[in-house]
Image (tube, each protein chain N blue to C red):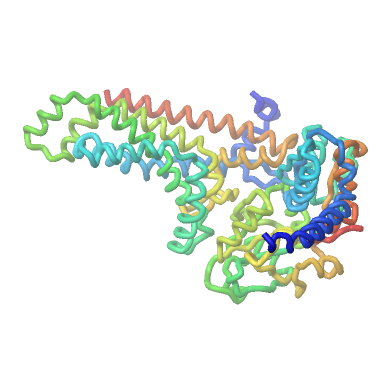
Length: 278
Length: 251
């Protein structure tokens, strides 16, 4: 009993700290107080880690708000928000002028992201030149031993055409070069990571925010794709992460995007491995 | 019906025969048609003997406890969702095929066909069992008394007698193999190349529809999936038609 009483003051102090910390932290989320409703988000799969964290915090703060997050790729995100099927359509590329005028889109850029080539961690090949990468994806370099690796065929993985990740990789890393018909297709950044993790002879490309120790990044022309090199502009295969709304943003969508651009939202962005814009 | 605009625009032949390369404005689904056909047929080739053997084992040679146990297991297998087959394939079969043949990524026609064969065989086995059951007992007793081996019994008495049921089972299984999306999507690699070997990666029509519909609408890519659906329907129809004809011949 005595022990408990001894601990009691500590307890009070701790809870006061926790309480004040809670107030300070929650200040950015105050905008969501008293709100109610459903917010639908779909599109780019690179955005999902950040969107999930933001949604988790908002829904924890106010359980009357429901946020649903779906993937589908940048193309799908733009089209779905344009057709009014979702409130926020994420894209890992800037919507084209045609798309903007057709759907009257407003774009909100909240992060910068690199797209890096990845291989299995056991693969000895850790650096490629731009020409070599183009050769691999065009199907001209077919064996790892041509690059100093094992004598095994290279398994190419790519994304479907609606992917913003594919778009930037194709434009900036491959210079709009061909992608071999033999390439395997995967549907999201997560699936790409899983595919490369499970295949020692694979090559693929993911958003830098998705990279961890289960895949090994490939240095392109001597530059390893990391948060730092993308931020400094050394690593060129980069793009903005956008959230798009039909017309000006309003209601919950406006609040969510404002929160994303606030210091707290931008901290989530950098915690998840992307580069904040503010 | 929704494929009509594409059909009317005169692009049909092009779509049916061209290769798939949206970057170059080509939207052919020939590779997908071939992929569907190869995977479904190969899975049937793999699973038909297995199913026949299993049902014969359960219904004729080992009607006792072993047969009943196996039947319970097969019935249990029909209840497993396809996505589980897909996952098992991804984590067990894909690395195995990759290391065994050291060709490609392990996501291949063969992998998908093996898993698909496993998926469709319970349907077949249960159908075969039911039709074997309907073979009159006096026939099998007569063959037994003539001193025939069980293989002869299967070949000369049970199979001809139960043929219509066997055929129905085959048609159902073929339809299921053609129509299955998830196993093919997860295991065949989805490349858009015209496959040249069973170790090549391929894309089926169903997987193609699933991939495009998840990522796109309001584009030519999206319109071609209706043609894919129509082709799939025709292919299944043709399969059933051929099976029915051969069934009539047998009678």
